[in-house]
Length: 455
Image (tube, rainbow, N blue to C red; front, side):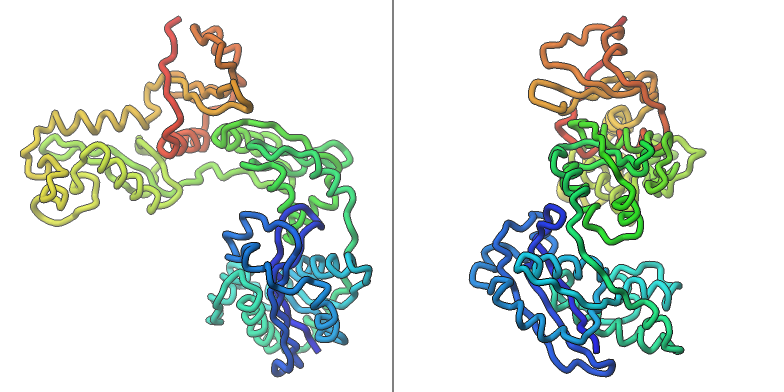
């Protein structure tokens, strides 16, 4: 007998989460014979990220039963059953933690449909619940809600039972999970900041085994320490202490992460690929002398203006600058028909597509865009947020080459290159670093450019 379940939780600190919703389907191997579905008042705050993901907020749970009011029903429906869940370790841990708060030791055997699907369907590109069931044609409604995910897991488990022809794999993967409050992980998270930066996980030999950037270091480490992914579990076992570096700027955090992964090569943190973008923007001059901005697949042999991680982000950028700078839709590839572009009819295009606007006037605006976003021959400082009040961050670009980052107080006079170089932490220029900086320039309107002072 199986109890196929899904749990939604509050998120938050490791082993301090509460259940907000639970769905359990008792399954005899052929059909569902009982079920229990309920919202639960967790008597604690729900993480904002979880609210956005599930749609469950505190107001919805005010009149819902508390866990102790449904605990007996959960025990009854799962007695003599093997717990089945997608990422079973997470659901089992949360459930056992709730029972532990009531002074009850909850113990059941369990099966994880992630592990089973990896062994019985190794050809699948992803084993996350949403992507897996969609690829198998299993309908899923109310994704990230307990009932929707539990029903999808029921159908997935039926299929896995059919796939296990020799009836060996499923029986061999039954686990006797034990849940203990991990004091080590709790203590490691306790004093971490809730600010932007990079964190480093060290093992007992003082080796860095994992590192990552985050807008909120404490929240990111919390999530990593509650994850049931194989990599996360290995880090949880080996980590002994955590060091962090605040950056104040997400761009600087990304630059540090990119370089440190390449340099340190932590065994549980893959280095960022040498080329993590698929499309780029190229300037192309037509037979009449007008400069077109063309979005194409990235080609390292050609000089580009900007790079993008996908085609959609490139198209979004083109639409935005077209509106800001009054560019012709025909000359940025948005309009591909004959004659004038659609913006000409609304007087938002000055008529370059009909050669009514001179090529010099039109090209001047295009060159302004190229100068703003390209690295070619650029000498500039990029000024952004610092790590604390009264501080700013800076990025140095000399002759089109990224040199490094630094921080300075608002009353600090940046009046010479000597001062700038004294503030800078040197970093290597790379395609990835250039992509990170250019992406931030086009997204962050509060990022200011400042000319490098003459020597």
